[in-house]
Image (cartoon, helix red, strand yellow):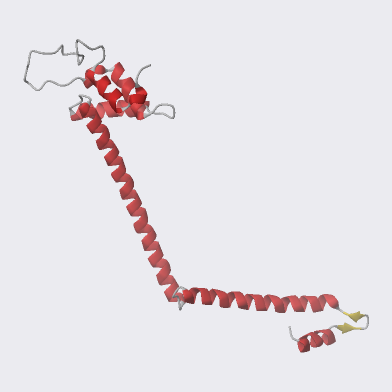
Amino acid sequence: MKIERLKELIEQNKTDDGINVEEINKAINDEINAVVTKAKDQSVVEFFKELGVESKDDLNAKLKEGDKLAKMLEEKEQAVKEAKMKADKLAKVNELRKLGVEDDDTIDYVLFNVEKRISDDKSYEEALKEFAKEKPKYFEKQATGVTTGVGTGTGVNPNDDKPTWQKILEEKHPDLKEK
């Protein structure tokens, strides 16, 4: 505030009782607020100019462009999520095929039952091992029409006490071996 303006305020607020300081303070604060607001407005304008925004239309165009980019990013994230889910299911299907489950309907049935067992306390691998123990028939190799005359048909090597599916599962996940 300039000295002349301050003198003017004092003259305007002289009373018979002295100077009305409250009115002078209020007028000073009003002028300070006006200067600060103008500085903020100028800062905002300068900030947007640095971003290449010269007008309101430019700003709206940039905002629309940002919205489009955000939507594209969201779509890409969803596609990645779906691809990961498909890859995870494919890995599970391949694992089940290695464990002797060959029929697509049986694979779907086994996956459904295993995934129902998954919880905070039980992983997919633990649930699979549990299901395979309870229902070993789903993990036996299915007949291909060629008979070799060898084997017991139980999925168990007569010289071994563990079914093939269990040995393969323990090889892939040694932390699940029975103690």
